[in-house]
Length: 152
Image (cartoon, rainbow, N blue to C red; front, side, top):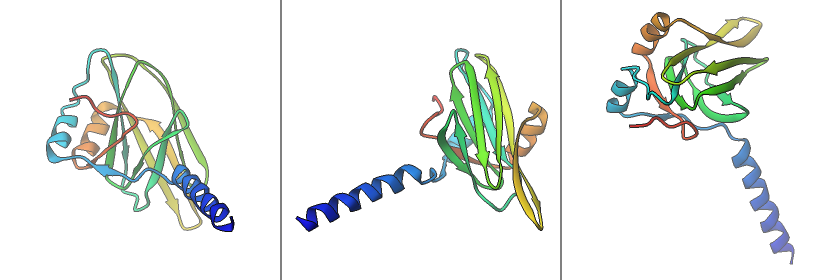
């Protein structure tokens, strides 16, 4: 009887841990990276490119409260979404939030910026120009999201 209770407790603990663990970043193939860097978007969808600057720390990204991936320095995460409003969140010491209203057939570019100082680390999510983002993404590593996958 004790073993059954112990087993149930162990399984419950593992499930809770799995639900709270940030998504491990999955790198895309070189072909997928080249395709994503064409910045082509399906006419009925929108694409949000979230990219990370030079920070050495990884940071989890949430969209509408759901973990979609973890960005590291010099990485980017393209999210193919339906038109609508999306709430992007990242949190290190303080939470940063950006709401985007996206339209079909358009790309949106968001920088998940690390602002580091000797006494403090914080993040900032901000929409940036396409020219600025393309330059940074060109030398960044593609990461994939299982929540908002890219269409072929």
